[in-house]
Length: 452
Ligand SMILES: Nc1ncnc2c1ncn2[C@@H]1O[C@H](COP(=O)(O)OP(=O)(O)OP(=O)(O)O)[C@@H](O)[C@H]1O
Ligand SMILES: [Mg+2]
Image (tube, rainbow, N blue to C red; front, side, top):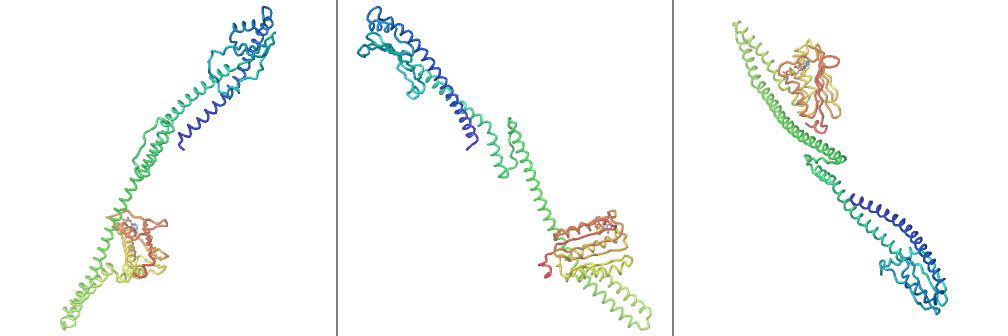
């Protein structure tokens, strides 16, 4: 049931209750006043006609004198006067009232309102006079008053209900607008705004609605922006992945070329130099030159091998991270004996899959290059830890901590990119206990890694 209908029903019931109480009070009052009026009128009439009855026999035959008197008297208010002869036949009855002639109050109402008064009779010589109280006019008056009141109430009630319905319709219109607005929001049209209502309660509601809609609109715009940014990021990642894959392939190719082409050539030079020295005979100078060529070629060979290892350590092909880092550590200790390097491995880090192994390897490589470039450290510790679902790599030095940035600074950004591409994280910065620390965490797909 609508609010409008409920309110008008409530008001209708209250109004009806009020009318019924009013009617009950009025009926009580009217009844008492009719009884009072009819009793008084009857008493006066009885006194008047009693005196007339006593004196009627003095001037002639009593029935005739009385009849003449009564005909002259006519109608007496609220009483009916009858004169009977000695045989009991009606000689005279007072004429009916002209007031509201031929109209009567409804029978049940008349029965309720008519007072129970006895008729009064006088016996005359040869006749009987009967005075009967008649409340019909007073009852009719009361009936007319009540019907006027009820009609007036009905008119008032109809006007009240119609105005109430119109007023409520006007008052509740913002609720309909609000419903339409909510429907718009439910359909995702967050640009919807409601006009301010002149009613303060509605105004608060509409401005609340507008605030919510504005917040939703902002949220929608941010969501859209987020989707765009995520898409752009995903596209960037794809490009980075592509570039990284290209660089790795190029490193691989370069390492192979250096190893196969330059390595073969340098080996050939060394063989020629050795044979030249063997066949130099007495030419001591030529033998010394050949020996020198052999020496230079040997160091060139070592250099090439080192570059090949740096470009692409052979152990990486087997996805053995622990072995690849061991190789880096060995080389580091040879080249930088003044900076102590430790490598600790926990868990099996030998079958992590190519992508993961490569990412962790490159991060350690760049972290060690940074130690040389920025840290001025005496010691570097590398920790490798494989736990359920995660691979953790930590490179910590005891150097100066965060050094002033220099150059293009692609290193840490590249590390972060590598970590993000594999769904991992990378943290780098000065450690609380001194030095610099790079921590890489990569999620492991336990089902895939052993087979890859
Ligand atoms: N081990 C470290 N000790 C002290 N500072 C470091 C260390 N590693 C990195 N940093 C600081 O972090 C900055 C960023 O390092 P990042 O590797 O990104 O750049 P870079 O080494 O300066 O240049 P790039 O790696 O691109 O050649 C460095 O410039 C340096 O200031
Ligand atoms: Mg760097």
